[in-house]
Image (cartoon, rainbow, N blue to C red; front, side):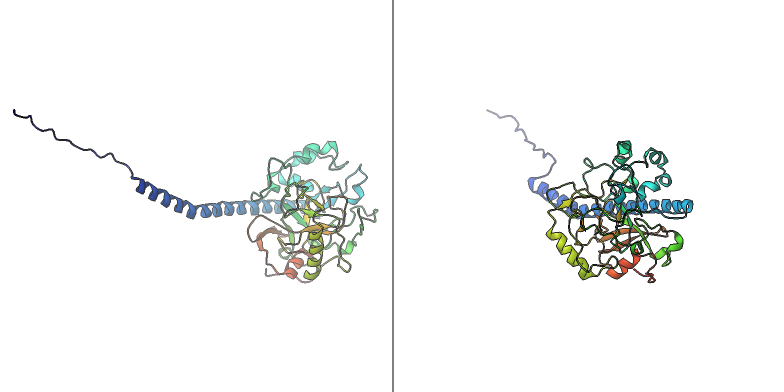
Length: 354
């Protein structure tokens, strides 16, 4: 019997990756992502730094406009009224509050009741109004838990800062509650002494106006970087101005040992004119390991002598604003004397290279 023609079986190959090829592709993509991700993050941080610096410049323009209108720069704190704590400045109004009309916030400024104090019900709206001009985009605070935070602080210079804003009030709240003298108010912004351009005898390009600060995490149980330690007396012999590295480190050690007593919400309100809300001093260098710290035990609101340091979430340093309106980035490793003298308005040692 004759058999029919044999059928030819044709095999078609379906295009695709083998398992080995797929694994190779996944490995290559993973390597590329690992290489590119840091670069992307660096680009994003670079953009945030530019935005941060531009916001400082915007505040600088407002400062110059304020000084042109009033012939003086604002003070750190303007005494609130209608509260027993007001004479110490506890609930007084900040320099930031005074700058609002020059930051396109005239309507918000008009909403503030300056005849009372920052905690009064009349000011609950402004007190909780966030303003992007006061916020550094690199800070990592929980934006769902914070209201009107502030990342830009005015400089009290290399001074312990604290003196009652009311000249009729001779003491500062808390124990020991020792005020410093008016002559020890040597920064561009002070509690009682007002500064104008004529007072910046070291030069507007050599005087520090503002720097950065970081917002607290709100944790009252565990101390973390950026929190404020309370109730730690200033060591005997510690000067009101220009403390040495040894003196600052001694106080830093005492504060660390007492860190269980801390306040977790620094820089949470731009309206409040107290150090660790809207001001700092140039005693410790930027991002110092020494914690922010003050004498008063019963309050987190800073109405006693203390040390409050410029800090940022940027790697390696902080942005600063000089009195001439220029913004610069300063390294954590800046010389201590240089940093302190940048904060003094008329110490006779202008810093021309830093």
